[in-house]
Length: 322
Image (cartoon, rainbow, N blue to C red; front, top):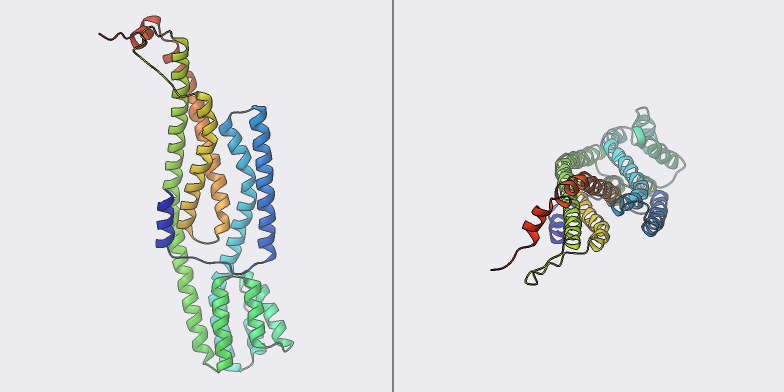
């Protein structure tokens, strides 16, 4: 599975959304460290106290990861919204700037339209130009505030084109066209990744259900062997310790969920920080599925296997070699 993720990472095109650091990135790290600390503390306390089953302990311990995960998804949504509005802005700006020849007047005309979440950065850009800040510095600060790869690349092209005296109408149209095409490719990739994500979620739930079934069968088999006297020394039965299997189940849930979450993230692209949301979601799904499978089969297996008649037990265990 690890090699499969590496192959996927190499094959799938990289999708860098955010560039550089920001206050939100610092806040995300703080939330992540806090969530890991809280989750680890809760997991240790619940494991020692043995109040609830270990699969549910895993779910509760990883639940705090939803906080940084949701915060990262909001960051990704905001950055993508800026990229969605950028092509229309840069085309409009290039057309007007080519006609009036003044960047300040061009931005005044551009701001008669509304560019959604990008409006704040455009207003700040206009104010800097009005205060006689160099265009290249204005574009640089604009890119830093927006923080997306598409806007940084587009602003760099526009800044260099202004310094070289290029036809800004053509430059703006070309930058807008390329940015729009990148946004369309990103949207198609998201659409394809949703199908892959659904398949992984279903297979993950089935895998955890199988592990839960195995754990319960080992427990039942161990109980049968322990409660049944075996008179034939030729038969040696050494069942796996159910306590050991029960201790391994949380590790299985976390490792499997992490691997599947990374696989989903490689397919999704975008901001890598959102992988923590995938890990929390898959861990919750896996832990609840495993616990539910264990509970659903507990009464059935106990009634139909452990409470067998003495004759049935003897037919299974008191086998004599001829």
